[in-house]
Length: 447
Image 1 (cartoon, rainbow, N blue to C red):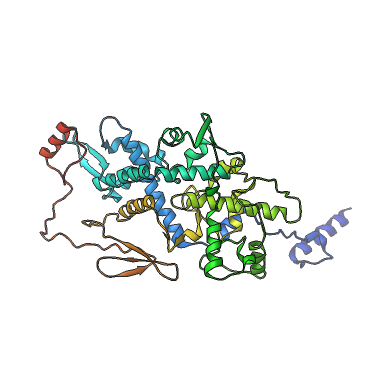
Image 2 (cartoon, helix red, strand yellow; image 1 turned 90 degrees about the horizontal axis):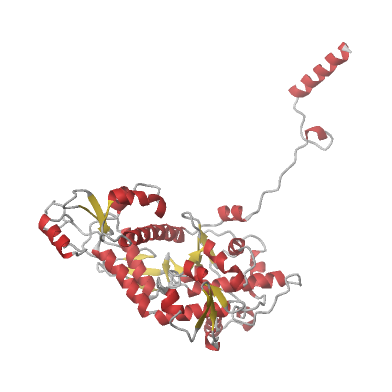
């Protein structure tokens, strides 16, 4: 027994020293090769990125944070300004990973920091320029009230049973250009269009056939008429534009061509059940969901919305699929930006060079707000007028008063210092001005 034990010990030591190569006859050292995972998360990480849309998503996150701070400040009853000590408690509410004081000082064109004349503590308020832009957006939203009614009616016409949850509309009210009190000013005011079934469900009174035309159908008609394409190629097709650097694998073009020609049930057509288990039923059902999301993004003011908020329309609009995976399947139609905590989906055909191809009045005002935020700490007397010019290659060129052009980028000239050469802080105010501010209850101080 002792001899056998010594033999096995020597045998094991020899095997440990000799590395036996992998092969079919030494099964005791075989390894299992795992297939690479192909999930929505891996496809999201490995996709081709669009740097301009990612940058736009990052800038919009800053604007959203500033807008949330403005709402918190406007809810204060004591006045239009708030102490920085109190604002420091809002960092977690607005989702800041830096101090509130550091964030406020980054944007002097948006926030004005001053010393309280009585309490002698640092306070902050929104600048007059930013407040004027916010008021301008509110006024334009009221002027475009019929356009907002038109958007809600089209959404109701796309729903399966002609009803929508008010909570879902509330989540994307800013994307749809709806006022804050849209439940009373839109749904309750136009009773010949909408009927509130209960507190959280709105119903369409009577559909209009003139509105049952999707944006994509107008594009197909224009492609068929102007480019002389065949009806077979344009009847069910979508505009496709891939980001720079997108790798086209073998057989991808054939699959895309077959998918473009695949018939499907259009968003505003009769809501018939699609047999998913039939031949090509799953592809036709998914293509109909793509058409619904495409139409929903086309109805928004800036042709984008957060991905998580699309899930609140799944049952009402009949999108019983994994929305995120479906968006990743079609990178030529949609683009998901992962900048920030919330992912944003863009309609690719609506953007060129990081700017909207066809802006509307509300998006123009929001672009002015974004330009004011992007000024940062640069000292400019006023924003130069920028004109969007669309050339034949669907790219945006911005022009300034200095005659310079930059393709796809906004040129904001940095003005030189004031001619007087005074180094004093021009945002500082005197005690007399503060006395007038307190006595009159005004929220504006001439600087």
